[in-house]
Image (cartoon, rainbow over all chains, first blue to last red; front, side, top):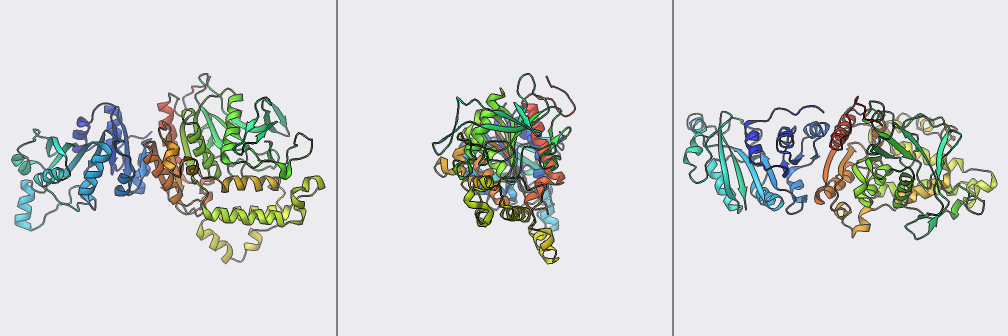
Length: 197
Length: 369
């Protein structure tokens, strides 16, 4: 079996949040870096959905259980409570209707883990102020740019509480935040949220 | 165990007849099969390969009767995705078939060939006959069951009927119910056989003849529908269609029993796994601990990828562990027989991961008894 690509910083932070031997569904699993990490380090029963043919193939060829499918339709197929965690590692912002996807993820998994790029990081604010551009092409397609505070509001609207949130800057996790997001919203380039109903 | 003309078969215990879905029972029952590799001491490395409508049990060795080469040498063999260095591979001629297993050409208890007196059978009956064979061989459960087309239907039926006895299941270019265009093709093939004057209302064996022209049409239709849309167009554009799809019986291939084709194609047409589960396919896999892989080929119009996607969605809805890939291919349904590196690497990944979960050695390691 070939090795999976090395996990990104947000994926290492996600792995810390997943309990041992949990059942995990990753929406948009790419080439399987996080699935591999979860299986190896958390003993998780981790499965993925990936729309890209080549990436889904790379996963299956590595022995990872991955279904090649559009993300939204696959999420709707799973029964209620089928997983302990549903994970979006930089994929929620690319979906057509992230609010719907969050509610579906809550139905399917109970706990939901989401990593996002923070559009209100100080560098992003300067970029917007001085160049007039919002996106620097951080993590693939971002159809929905959010700040950390924007996403917290979206999670609340989907009736999900933030159990734990970790900002990441230059690949390093910062101090977790839950109540006050002011600092993280300025200095976190990305953030990982653990959400629970 | 007996071997006639290089075809090995087992006469099953006649005190335990095969009870068919129709309520009838079939006895005596003989099942012809081939095996490759060695069963380990824990009996945990058995693989059942289910052959398709036009196939036979000679998955990895030449057929001694027809002289045809093995039909899946890229997938089954030493160092192949189904690695016979570490796995024990069985392939049985289907119930109702004509390569040594009891079928319409077999002798009924009255000493005459069954012909059309052979009972109607379904895919579930074919699977139960395979289960009887495995019991007779002392194999309680399967590491893997796999098949393509009608073979994939059997694999899915296995996982659904015997979930605790199947560790991993792979369906390739298949469907959970016979696609409509296959029913139409199959009916035309049956009509071709029955319209052949030599069919003699199914009693041709007693007359020493064979509806060869009808059978050849069935073969031609199978070859044609196994191609991709582009290949079909090219076949007819070139004007060579008449030669390529010649109706002259091919002496090498034309050994199958045409009545057997009538029965097996009807079994395939009637296959609808969801029908036994209130119409909800997911219920067929409920609580299933089996690991599933579902593979489809993009240019397959006999078993379009959408049919495989339906299987994958049902597996997801049942909460079963499943992989699904649509392999990009220009080779139509018969892509599964040819050189498809993406299919082979994905299948290898699926089988290797299942093998390591089952504690079986990887390629090159020998854990054989």
